[in-house]
Image (cartoon, rainbow, N blue to C red; front, side, top):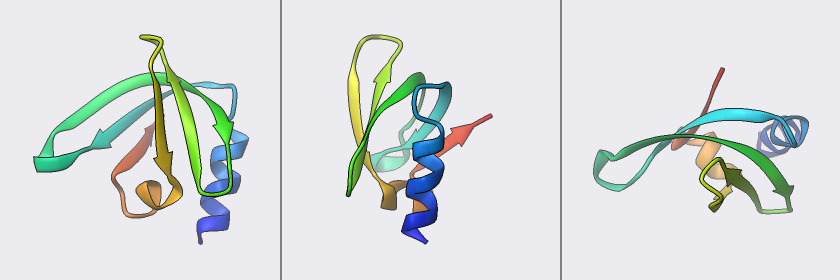
Length: 69
């Protein structure tokens, strides 16, 4: 299952996308960014505010990070 998610993230690399992150204490953050790094256990997103955020593939698996299309 994680391999499927990793492939999906890799296919979105370099494409401007919208994301929704469900953080701690039900804080929801929506942001735009480009996936710029895909690694074995994590991937990084360069946001439109010039921030770099890193997430694990399990964040996508359990629904903490969603791709908004």
